[in-house]
Length: 204
Image (cartoon, rainbow, N blue to C red; front, side, top):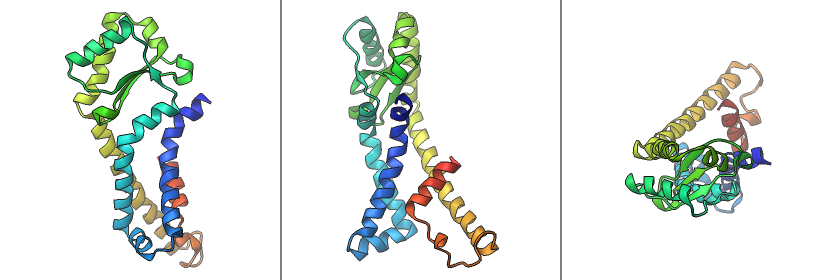
């Protein structure tokens, strides 16, 4: 269950994108279908979905991971003091029960301050002294100040576009090279959105 809850926030967006595209194709309206059938329409749809997901994803992830606010105490005060010193805005400091909280780790998620959360596991807090807590928080705060989350987002978008392009090239090579299908009018010539999603996940 810990593995499922940990990976669900990664898998769910792909399923939602696929379901959204399939729902649009089932609607009795031609304009959205024609728009979505173009490469520009697919890119715009994906980027709009991703922009909305970036904002609300941290709030959804904390639900999937069953994170709860870190109770008041010396540890929380220490973390709050570090964030205040670094002028880091955030929504809350959460106890991260990943793998029953036995994993020694911490993290930060959220590009927007209102939806930004600092995560710490119980095991990590138990073994760290005050100076070590400061060091761990400085590391996590550095991710925000150095715009690492923005870099990861740009890298992710570039990977998606590259995967999309590579998928088309591989598909055309198979069809026109007659490696697997004898006819270019094979149903694989227009793969379903779910097929595209699965191919992208397999190549990642």
